Image 1 (cartoon, rainbow, N blue to C red):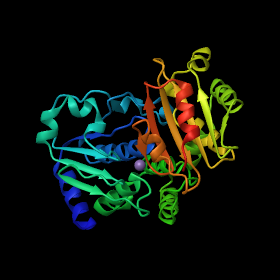
Image 2 (tube, helix red, strand yellow):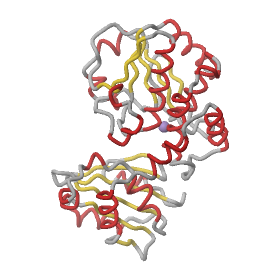
Image 3 (tube, rainbow, N blue to C red):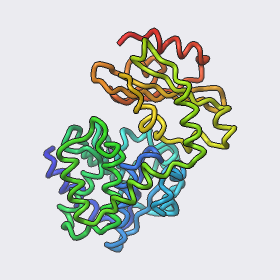
Image 4 (tube, rainbow, N blue to C red):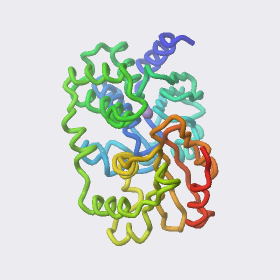
Length: 326
Ligand SMILES: [Mn+2]
């Protein structure tokens, strides 16, 4: 289906719905969150009732937005005319929100807005490629086309810009595109609060976390003369600082570890049960992180992948990394 036909269908469904469920996969993902907050604000302005639900409470990383009360962890029992899912690859990724509400997902029309190649839902608008660097760019297009640019107020523009900054790491990763810059310029014209986003996304690390990052960075394990480096967050480091693993986000791997001169970096985070969460970041297309993540049944993108293991001890994991040939 042509994009415009799908956009028309989505707008038709939005317009005819009074009660809407908005949901997404990861409570960390600022792009999905930006989409849903903007849609909820639009719904409120139009006298609709839209609720945002995630299986987990919103990460404290977003405290600065003052919206944690808007994200529920259980779907309120009532009639829904439509379900909008943003930036999420499959129903299964919704976790409890999906598994606890089988009837809702069977009966209500499902709209899937995603900038990855996903295919599910009654109306699926999924585009991958340079033209949609973030899902918020798609939502902005829906809002502008359906209700005119004047429907995007300062808060909504800030939420939409958050999505772009989250997915491009503020124009620093391979998702960065000319369209992304144009979109950011447009959101700035709508008075998006760029300073607030930058201050809170990149300049608000608590001293205990900076201390943890310093300890990790001071003890890096090089692979093949520094071709790659591994950073390790141990359970003990976290416990000593009363830092929970869930509060870490991607800051350490994206902003600090990746600043080290190497082709690729790997971060291991030890969980309470002796398992390891793994993040892989490449800075060179020739270093595809997916096969390495695949050795631990993980996956993702060429330049950014993830995995989890609770079946290998640390020394075996390090041996697997060191013996991998790209
Ligand atoms: Mn996204």
